[in-house]
Image (cartoon, rainbow, N blue to C red):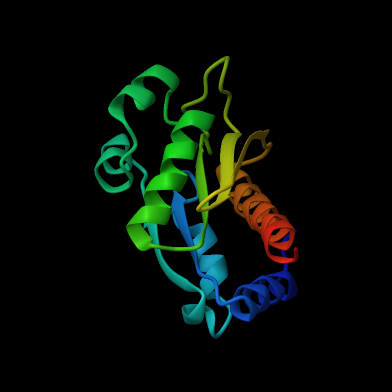
Length: 163
C-alpha cells in the first residue's frame, strides 16, 4: 500500500530535484492523479493528467497509433509505451505514469482476464513497462493498479535521480 507518507516522500524528491510528473490513465480513471494531488503543495510537481479511457482519446490526445491499438489492443505494453511518450510530450513533464487495464467485472478475455493491467513509468530517456494481474472487485483492481503505479514511479525516481 502506497501511503500518504510515501506520497509526501515522492513529492519531496521531485521538489528537491525540481522535476515534474504527469499521468495518462485509462482503467484507473484519474485515481493516480487524485492520490498525487491529495498532498498539499503538489502543484509544484504535478501539472496535468489525462484520463484516456477510450481508444479515440488515446489516439487524439496521446498520439497512440491506431495501428498499435488494433494490432495489440489497448491493454498492451506497446500502447502504454505510446501513452507514456504522448503524455510526456503533451504536458512537457520530466516523469510520467501510464496505465491501461481491465478493471472488470466485464471485458476480460482468456488472454487478458479481468485484473490485467499494464503499468508504465518513464522519463524522457528511459521507460519501464510491465503487465500485472490483480485480483478482486473493480474498485480493488483500480486501487491496486494505482498503488503499484506509485510504487513503480517512486523506485524509478530513486534510481534515476539519486545517481
